Image (cartoon, rainbow, N blue to C red; front, side, top):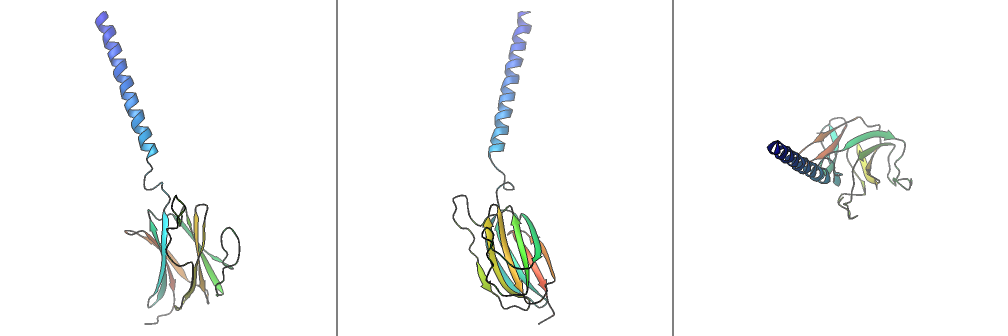
Length: 169
């Protein structure tokens, strides 16, 4: 009888140790965020002209978050709502979320242009219009209504917006 009592105590002790080990392992895993849970950083925006399309590329560190692209009547700066001083008749707003153009210490990591006039067949200007509360927003300006498609490329991570135009090459 004494032997069975010792076995039960040993089994209980082993069980407590296993539970403690597993729960501490779980809390370590939760405390260490994965690459997918850290906010991706927007580090650059660039553009280029091709024979049948203009391309706008947004470079990221981390992963490419959800991106929405929509036509807007005008471009405004996030937060202030002030109009972006860029010429054009048509505009696209590109919004990334969650994303940031700054690190946790508040230092800018975005090194691209904030506002630039562009002389391509379709793309006439680009502006970073916001880095505010988990959203990074860009605007693109056009003289004629844009026909566009967008997609994601990896290694390095980037969002790509292609704007079609008649062949120029």
